[in-house]
Image 1 (cartoon, helix red, strand yellow):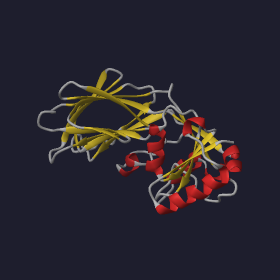
Image 2 (cartoon, one colour; image 1 turned 90 degrees about the vertical axis):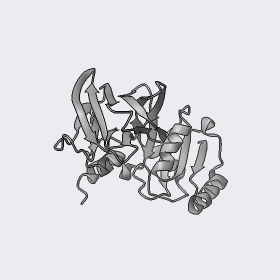
Image 3 (cartoon, one colour; image 1 turned 60 degrees about the horizontal axis):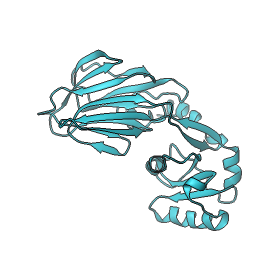
Image 4 (cartoon, one colour; image 1 turned 120 degrees about the vertical axis):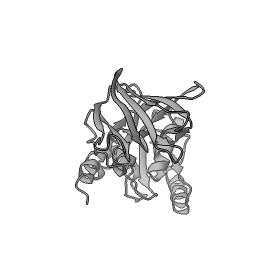
Length: 253
């Protein structure tokens, strides 16, 4: 099995990847049967984006902090065996098309979430439409998040959004510090939904849009939809499946 090793910028990960390369060899990601990522959740997501044209699955080993999307075993003697026995999880990204106040549109992918965030001391005023129908004429808030099931335990959870089981065919639409309507706690939407979020007062209440690592400023509107034609494969040890982690997270206190 041909492996490609990627390491985050810390001493422990660098030393581990040096040992692994000596033991198993190392090829370019595009030539690999599997890509082994040593780092945290952020570095794994960064690797998914950086190597978007690579078809090989990603096997992550946690050398970061949380490591929700990575495996915890660091035994260097059985990497190939663990990859061969791993459970596969397919992730489909959200496609964000953001249009700024100058009319320029930029498209970016997000495997965790798309978020709109106020840029100034003033709250944002947003309008939300689903599948072409206006659902919320004015949301006064610090921002709003559209999260995938895999991303629902990240920023979405911190904003008091719901944890979504991996096999659930829904997205979380979660407000950040909603001021009006104060009682609105968000919505669960089918993954096929066309979500349009518009900045009502873009001239005086600037808003930024973020898709995982891509941040855009002074946004007028954002269109979000999941693209099931694009997928990335993550590998998990059988005793550390992502599905089980997401279920277990719902009972954490």
